[in-house]
Amino acid sequence: MKRTAFLIIGATAAFAAMASADTIAPDDVAYDDYGSVADSLTGVAGDAANGEKVMVTKSLGNCVACHQVSVLDYAAFHGEIGPSLDGVGDRWSEEELRGIVANAKMTFDGTLMPAMYKVSGFIRPGDFKGKPVPNPPSILTAQQVEDVVAFLMTIKE
Ligand code: HEC
Image (cartoon, rainbow, N blue to C red; front, side):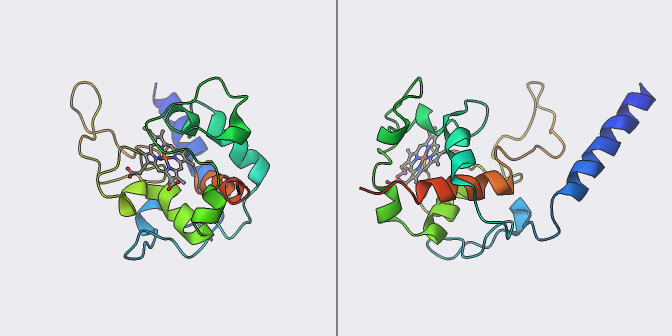
């Protein structure tokens, strides 16, 4: 039992070390008054192809559960809770999209859209017994946010 815990801690430390020193932690992301985030979260250019995968993967962003996107029509399910993302790369700048994906609540007060890059300040942090969950992970990693933003920027009318 002790040994397993040790291995898990070791793996977590290795993973943290893998994240580049330039990666901005969720609590350190700087949003401006309108919810935009000027600087890349990682300093590594986003990979649009990977961003597309994140958007249709249920365990990751699962964006299509709430958003219709014509170029992602091959994905199984498109919800209508959020607006269609067609032309989103024309409507918003990269900085604005980074803010919306990382934490949409900074742009749209009280939105239903989940914050994808956030680890603290949840209203109900806890497991089913009401115990606080230590260090809950963000839904997306910093690089996945950058990848999704890169893909969104390609969605033009
Ligand atoms: C639970 C539903 C839900 C999920 C999941 C979700 N969103 Fe949203 N999203 C919304 C809603 C609702 C809005 C409208 C904002 C508001 O509340 O006014 C929105 C707004 C947006 C906007 C601004 C749209 C525009 O045209 O103005 C973008 C961009 C966006 N979402 C991207 C994403 C991406 C990328 C993902 C996946 C990583 C995602 N959303 C996942 C519900 C969701």
